[in-house]
Image (cartoon, rainbow, N blue to C red; front, side, top):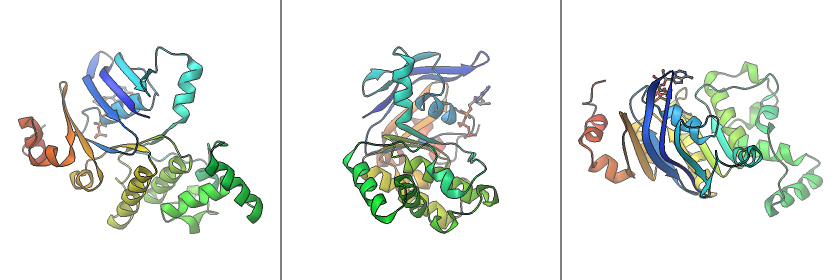
Length: 255
Ligand SMILES: Nc1ncnc2c1ncn2[C@@H]1O[C@H](COP(=O)(O)OP(=O)(O)OP(=O)(O)O)[C@@H](O)[C@H]1O
C-alpha cells in the first residue's frame, strides 16, 4: 500500500514551505528525507501522516485521495500510519503501557496466533506485542519502569517501539536517532530494516547523511524553493541530477 504526496504545496502564515513536492512511500521500502534545517521535512511528514491537509495538491493512500474522501475513511487511513515525532511524547505510565498504547485488535492470522499464544502464557496479546517491540529497541528490561524516569534517548526508543508494536502499513520517523548514541542508533536502524522486511513502508527524515546511505533504498532531497530530487540512494549520493544536491551532500551549500 503506497502513501503518496502529489504536487503538494504547503506553508504557514502566508509563507510557502513546500512547493510542488511529489514523492511516494511504497511498502517494504525505506525512503530517507534529507535537506537543510527548516526546509520542511517535518512539515512533509505531518502531511503524509494526515495530521494536516496540504494547501494544494493531493495525499493518496493506496491510490485513494485522502482529503476528498470522508472523515471516517481518513481515520481508517490514519490508523494504518505510525508516526514518531522528533520529541518523544510519552504519557505518565509504565514503559510497557506506553508501548501498548493504541494497539488495535487485529483479525489477521498473526493476530489470532498471538491471541492463542496469549491464552497459553496468560498474558494479554497487547502485552506480548508491546514486549516484542520493546525487545526490538533493547528496552524490555525497563518495561515496568515509569516512562517519566527515562532518558531522552530511551524515551525516543519507546516512542519507536509504540509505533512498531502497532504494525502500521507505513512508518514515518522524524529524526528518530537525534538523541541516541551510536549503539542505540544502530538498534533503531536495525529496527527500521526489520520493519521494511515485514513489508512496512518507512519514511525517515534525518540530518545524518551516513544514516541515509546505510538504510535507505531511496533518498528525497529537499532544498527549498520547490527543489526536490528523489532517486535511489546510490545515484543521489554518487551522481545526483541536480548540482545543488551535490553541493548539499558535499557540505558546500551554505544556507
Ligand atoms: N506550526 C507552524 N507554524 C508556523 N510555522 C511553522 C510551523 N511548523 C513549521 N513552521 C515553519 O516552517 C518551516 C519548515 O519547518 P519544518 O519543521 O518542516 O522543517 P525541517 O526541515 O523539519 O527542519 P529541521 O531539520 O530543523 O527539523 C520552518 O521555517 C518553520 O519555522
